[in-house]
Amino acid sequence: MSKHKYFHSTRFRTLRSNSRIYATMTSTPDLVSWTAEPHGRGTMGLLWSCFATIFLCTWSAIHPNLPGVNESQVRTFWRRISHVVGCLVAPEYYGLDALLSLAGARTVQAQTPGWPLRKCFYLIMGGFIVEHDSGEEKHRKFMKPEYLIELCTQKKIPWPEVDEDDIDDRSKADGLVKLLALTQISWFVIQSIGRAAQGLAVTTVELFTLGIVVWAVMIYIVLWQKPFDVQRPTVVYLKGSEFEDVIKRDPDVKRVSFINNSSTTRNDDLWSIGIGIVVSLGFAALHVVAWQFHFSTTAELWLWRVSSVLCTLTPLFIAMLLGRETLMVPQPGTSTEMETSTAVMVFILGIIYTIGRIYMFVEMFISLRAVPSSVYETPQWSQYFPSFG
Image (cartoon, helix red, strand yellow):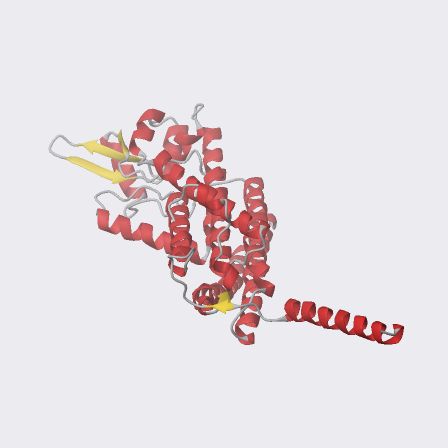
């Protein structure tokens, strides 16, 4: 064979090999829809894993305040479910509320005669109710925590006596629930790291689940000292005149609302907002990771991109508005106008955020109709770790 022919033959084989490599790199990945379980990870196993992690995270991270006096268990249960759903739609809100609750407990701690933080949490979550025995019958009434603190600091009544062991007894399965949640979280995170290390595809459902994990861990740390799911309050006995004063000041209040209303310092508020922004950006970044993921249509791809950007920026803008209101010292007569304008802007941003979040929540499931086949490949070593999904 002549050198000329050998050169062209070698060049042809090289070009053909390069074209194969290019085609492999630029071709659409093998797509699959619903996948059964018997031969490895299937669609149902993937969803169950995510649902188990999400439920354990949201249920154990939310620390509800005590129910109202004589409130039914059914009403209390459905309120808890509403918070779980709310945490799926706006976890940033619940994270910020947890930070503000911690700030409120620390503010109360500075006013108490050396109370531990757990006891201060118990107070601001409605752990004490008042009772007056008229001789004929007993009258019980819920009292706002701030009013109880006021009576105690003014030495009109003594500080309530309750042991931390008693609070722990009233806290239902606190350690067990969090242990189950942390076990599932650890397994899910390890599996996700393994998939990334081996170059296996992940779904948007798994990214969303990782985001919930981020928020849950943050809330665990912040509310570690707050009692979990307490149903039975501690009774504070008052004299007739003191009890009548409570009724006059709080005639219609039944319980402490979930939203933190405890008094906090300006620095505490700013720290809470700052930490909330950092964690919120981390949560949002997990959704932006799907920027180059495969979507069935171009419209779905761009809707996901736009929604992920909006859900990243809107909490940041809301935090900036709240921070501005905290920092600004309003002039006489302007405080109401500033609060109204801030409330309107926060409401509009909240609507935009909710629309983007709902779209991504729906897209997470409909995108499973066509995903890369490697989604259902399992890291070889993940099977050695126990899990509940």
